[in-house]
Length: 167
Image (cartoon, rainbow, N blue to C red; front, side, top):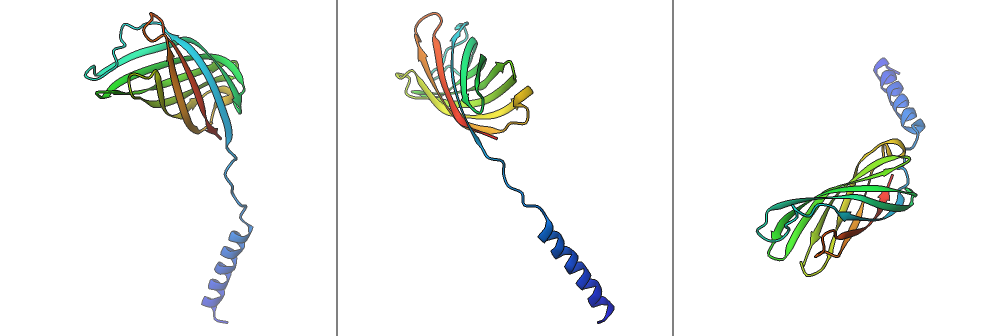
């Protein structure tokens, strides 16, 4: 056998051996997360959602949440939200929800649609953007549904249901 063929044969054998012996990589299984939260809007002075009102901001503080699935536990929630008038009968609501527990904190960035204005609900999606402690390195996505109770009162209650999967 000529020397060039030996080199090709050795390289081919080494390559095939490497491919055959390389460990298989599989994705980590995703876990379900389900979170129910509730809190009051403490300062309504900047909230003017609706057509032609541009962007308004609100902060939901002092809220609490109860999580089941891969994030079992309870804690506090703070939500910073912006309303952007999308049309004559719709608002896009987007922001960050920060969940704090004894095991760390995590942030879900969300976007939801309030349509029509006559209904006190917002439906949308979230993405896991940051975590500390037990939530460090987590990734995930899901859906969120907000319901406003007492919208015309001085401190409306906002209930939310966050569901999705994380890994």
